[in-house]
Image 1 (tube, rainbow, N blue to C red):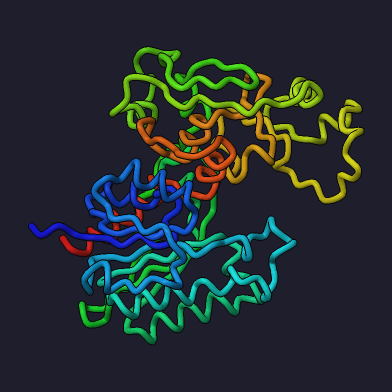
Image 2 (cartoon, rainbow, N blue to C red; image 1 turned 30 degrees about the horizontal axis):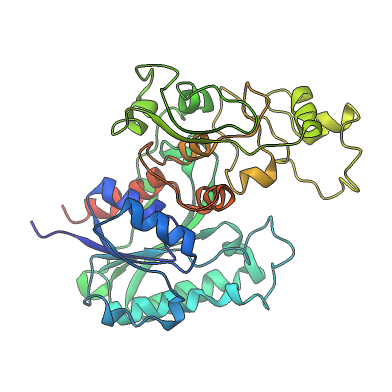
Length: 358
């Protein structure tokens, strides 16, 4: 059987490519502007050609042939994020990067495409952007469908909603992708299931490699994450100052910055008027995690230990396998984790796409 190939643009660290490989689709070209994310992609996908450059300067036909099985990617999302009020406007140049996505679809004519972005993309500028993108993709010869999916419904231990458009080339049959028939998990994976075998750590730990706390995985999720790993790697925790640790100590599972405020420990905050509910959130054992975005800046707290999440813990909550290695300084690594599409969410979409070929 001919190998089904993929092009990953705006690839980041490669979360969607990991999902495609899990499903049996081979990424042959990836494009990413950020040097640290591109190095991470290269380190984990040695068979894939990686271009670390501005996508506006790339002619895709100089690097690959027309008609790959699928093209996927998500243009920079800062301008669409509901959490980012500073750049949520039409003047942000990132808000127009979707046109580069359209150019790649036009030039490469993939059989399928998968477009991903933050939920705010759907409502941005009163829905103008989402409608425009989907209409232009239809004009390029695709039958499309779009929706918002929650990663927790597909085996990711995290409540994380993302917007997707999937299209199939009309010349290939024009299949309308059916999101409703994607199989969802019967029971959502919890924070405890995701993290309970990872090593105990303290504030500021930088442990590159160590044994798992539990020798054998106690659940299917941990088993899946560990299937190619003998050790827990990249157990890196940001070193927070003592007054922040004092705040952590008074916050119980499910509580957030309000608990610290109520205990008189937010006096250094000039204003809490715009502080959202995810700040200083201690994760709950028996539920999926809150959204893992820039978890260092959000000050997400380990469910039992008075510290922030380690890089490996955040990667677990995103469904990155334990043998996935992030490159760059810790802050860049943390951002790569937070920006990624969870591999298991991507895999669920790719599995459904492949089912139409069977």
